[in-house]
Image (cartoon, rainbow, N blue to C red; front, side):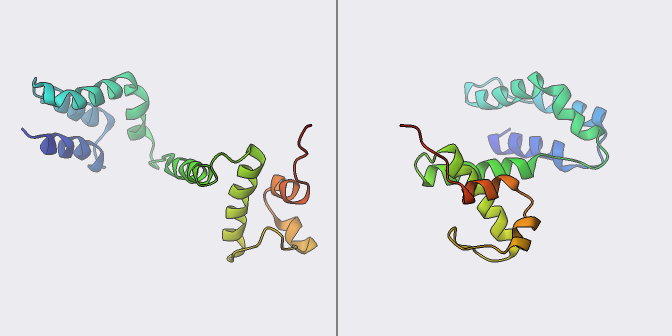
Length: 143
């Protein structure tokens, strides 16, 4: 068995949506048992150990009828981290304002300049109260 086959077999556990939780756990156990003893396959044993450590939570995914995931949250966190890296260490207030600004520009369907003025009606419709606070009142720095 090659590493590619092991990877594909692992993905098949999650790609086969009609599987019940018990079937998925049995498929994982069979996959885990199929990992060769060769040292080259240690990364797969590490993956199997991680799944075992969080087994209950990972396989709870099968019990949920709507297949909820936190993919949106993970993507948002990645975008925030990228913004922080591009800014080379923004302050928390600046990072929060830039993140909320990105959300605001998508909400309005156009790009805004941070210095542009919004009408009173637009301010009222904003879902993020902290965006108003960040843009209207820059944080005061200590001495």
